[in-house]
Length: 340
Image 1 (cartoon, rainbow, N blue to C red):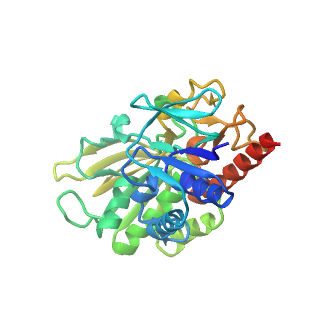
Image 2: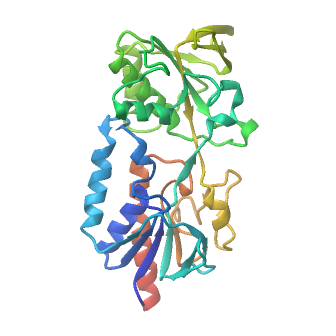
């Protein structure tokens, strides 16, 4: 046996999988389509619910990975997985053999322009949560003309729980992301009025409910239960929104300086290609279905094929890292059992 295990994807789950496999005596090979490792974490400024700098987590993983014997190939795309999980085919047609494959290719961000009623990509001062994270990293939240917004509205569940765009699942982390960013906007611009429009606030993780309470009590963020039905530009480049407060059953119309769309997670485009492997099953959402959600959440129907991170469902960073560890141990257990 060569001991080589191919890991598709160099985000947090893939990096942690490689680190743990190296500790267990295997030869991990990470294949990453982007030019550098880190996945979506590279786009983030601070992490919920602790406000930990994203670069602290990312640099820590990179340093640990650099101290291993893991091989890394960036700017390389996997086109398919061998039927028995014994290797992969790259986009250039070449083939790489391995004892096992771990799929950690992550997720895609829902393209907000598909919700045309909100005007993303058409109107100035309509942004996504990804855009706002970039602003945080680059020094401050600003409108298109460089001025400071005085009123900001967040809209949750853009591309989640929405049958119109075939995204019926809950992305799980959008609610807490919106709460975190609303607090950050208030920290940067204390005089700003910040509104948050939501269907349901799903605060499932440790510290999430506390952060939500802090947003209301300490930062006076206005949470409105209701969806925005339409956004349109005003003559002075602001954004007029129409919504309904479903708690009191009253329609609303207001003008804000900035509308921020909390975009959800959608299944990675590569999942469809990987789904041609007979051992890989997909949910209707496009995420990969594991062998068993309870006792086999990192396993497939093949003993040489495993999963880690958000390739199977929306997860937070901690959960993705933990699945990287679990996948590595499952690989080790399966391959060592095959030797006997």
